[in-house]
Picture 1 (tube, helix red, strand yellow):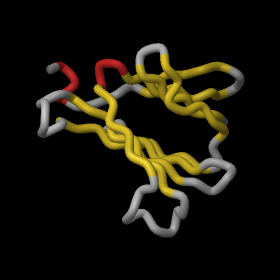
Picture 2 (cartoon, helix red, strand yellow; picture 1 turned 90 degrees about the vertical axis):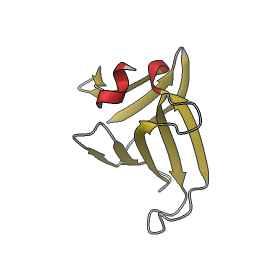
Picture 3 (cartoon, one colour; picture 1 turned 30 degrees about the vertical axis):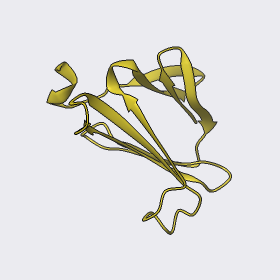
Length: 100
């Protein structure tokens, strides 16, 4: 299985996944073959009031307190897809803040 997160036309990440969790609120957690762990969180950025996706990378999946990388992406530009059976399927983003 593969996951792809894009911001507009730019691919933020496209990779094989070894584990994947998708939550009702649209957040996604996944682990990749090099053992890095990624967590996406959706919410309102307090600095600008926009719907935002926080994309965090952790080198050690046993220590999720200190991310090694954090990206902040406006939700209006974000798309998350999974490749299942050789076909990309979009994971819908959720939350009432998406309409703002």
